[in-house]
Amino acid sequence: MSEVMEKIGRNARSAARILALASTETKNAALMAMASSVRRSANAIADANAQDLADAGTKGLKESFVDRLTLTQLRIEAMAKGLEDIASLPDPVGTVTSEWARPNGMMISRVRVPIGVIGIIYESRPNVTADAGGLCLKSGNAAILRGGSDSHRSSLAIASCLVEGLREAGLPEYAIQLVPGSDRSYVGEMLSGLNNCIDLIVPRGGKSLVKRVQQEARVPVFSHLEGICHVYVDKAADPAMARRIVLNAKMRRTGVCGAAESVLVDRSGSESNLKPLINELISAGCEIRGDAAAQAADARVKPATEEDWSTEYLDAIISVKVVDGVGEAMSHIARYGSQHTDAIVTEDQAVAERFLKEVDSAIVLHNASTQFADGGEFGFGAEIGIATGKLHARGPVGVEQLTTFKYQVRGSGQTRP
Image (cartoon, rainbow, N blue to C red; front, side):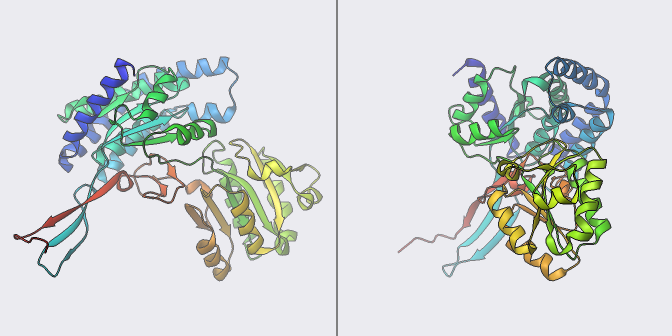
């Protein structure tokens, strides 16, 4: 293991012990100071981002990737506001989630505590630096951040603001550390656990990154491999609402994991819904790959292959399929989806409730866009990622999900017979 990473791990573990005992007031003061620092440094952050974007331009990267990399003044302000929102959240640390008395007089309490040291490995989105750092701090955890090489200057500028906030609040600056440089070996060292200094890994990036983390990590992982999100338009859908939701779910931001990648249209309502939906998407610049029914509805639809039903495009491309009712829609989602986010558009409450109950995804929506798959939209302030596993955390991972618990037992001299 390199001396650099070994030192980062030791410093993070030391900082985690202090953060676990830090008061809510101190953590909030640090978060507010971070937000102020981000605003003061907005021009410096934008300049660093411009350099990253210039490099990206020479590599011919996809437009969706460049969009994730880009930090506008509006997005920089959103980072600052996100840190303030995290400060306003209830502190989960020390919360008693349950307590009970035993017949022998012992009192048992289950109490939320920090996880410890969290390693976050992410790619193009430099705003993750602020979101992850802020969420880890509020939940009493130290953070080791490894951003992508394409966003390293931007992430470094943001991380310096976070460290300044820690310093102002009297907290250890090693509570949030950015791995220095983009050497891929750093990822391997983090996945090893840094000599038991990392308690949890959270990957945020493409399929290849997440797959590597899941295969190689020697510590627990919160992750999702892909965001293959569906919108099912039921026969009882309001046509105008369906068009608005599908357009937003796909085209608001095509490169986010909550972007819809497939639209399923109920055959019984296809006469009123299918052609208008296709026209709306194509008019917005979206390529459509569809089944025979979708192609018959509009000659501009390209034929879909079997691979299209399980592809996360992260681009202005979507697959469209006509299905025989909600049952076939749910079967399709179960076969091709990634248990991330799926939505139904319908005015039939019974069908909606069936969909909400039976679709086995981390987030299931009725009459709302899949782009709401976001911790900030859930009232979490921000998110460190979307977890699609079924243990400990599922869906947007916010401050509460970044804690675990312990049992505190209070006795009066009891011994076990």
